[in-house]
Image: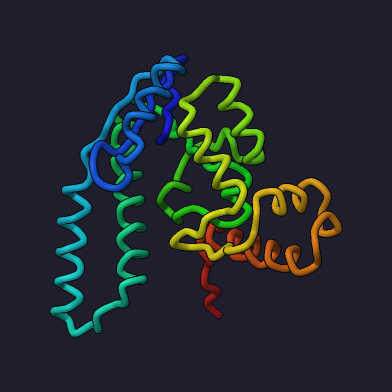
Length: 212
């Protein structure tokens, strides 16, 4: 669910089909509450055809088959990146900026896809903790299922295709971000710091080669 700043108007954009469209009704409700236009983009056909074509090319070139886990990871990454390409197509058509939805929690633990949902011009929630985002959603009276799902996820941060955070809670992370390493157990602090380093590497600009 992405927004574009168009003069004084914000346009919401979401996938119209495929796994990323699971919250379509909620997205429509949010757009109505925030008084935004919602554009639903049909990206799944492009995703499935490109994935099949690329997979066939690799197989034909003698590349060994990937594991089921890696198949899911690369498919999820492709889907996110194609969606963002479509979002920027719309943004370029409207001469608009893309506002991403990642918050401080997502950025800290690397819960994003490089060149996917992290590919935005501005991150309005980038300095806001997950609990603040949930509080804001409550104040705006956004759909209860969406808020309850976010609250449940905050109790135990879910793994993603790029992060393994099993056992780490949002409360641990927020205590660390608010009070530093002394705010949590040493083992928890070490886990968070490993995730932060990995997130920084994934979000950094590409490394430039030094030619001597």
